[in-house]
Image (cartoon, rainbow, N blue to C red; front, top):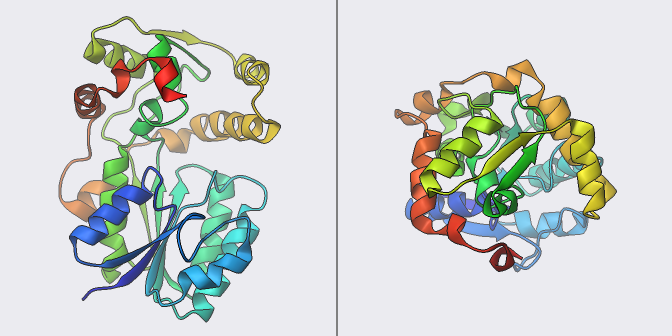
Length: 280
């Protein structure tokens, strides 16, 4: 059976991968973004109904994170609009070990919609498509929480799980936790990337306070600094977030992507051979 599916954040790290996966399966996909027509804008709830109209299902990713103020209200408004528009099911991408995100999960679970919750660990792609790319290119990565051992997960794996549970109703009312197969520290990560790139990349452990001050020095917005401080302290510092899950293998019948596979693929792409100027 083919579905009409709204992918909110359809140009983002997981969203664009989910769009491709659904299209390959023959489903009709609408990208939920401000630039699309009809548009979807988290900051403008009046756009919700138009984007949801005519859709059977939706994949929900909230930007910048479910932990930020206003996220719960936005998710509540969206689920009410989805019910009104007659959607069958939604899948919410959540963060593993995030208490604030779990409050948003509860809203979805109690909405009256069929749903699946997908909780993900930190992404491998943070080092190739996001805020840690520039330090990698500069050859110097200074981050707090040096003792945290995180089972970083690949965005391709998250997207494959989301694509599956969006169209397979046997996963209704379930929470799927997606991690990588191996726990790694930031130093482990940097060393593997350095080896793969065959160039020197240094990791330095700093305190969370030093990291926050560095972000202030670079002129980053206060809400951005708050979010990253929260994610490092509450998420990476949470022992639950350092556990490996085998849900990926249960859902898809294969092993999750190891970080070494991600490194090999990314080296071939040339992303880590750019100059910093090319990423700005």
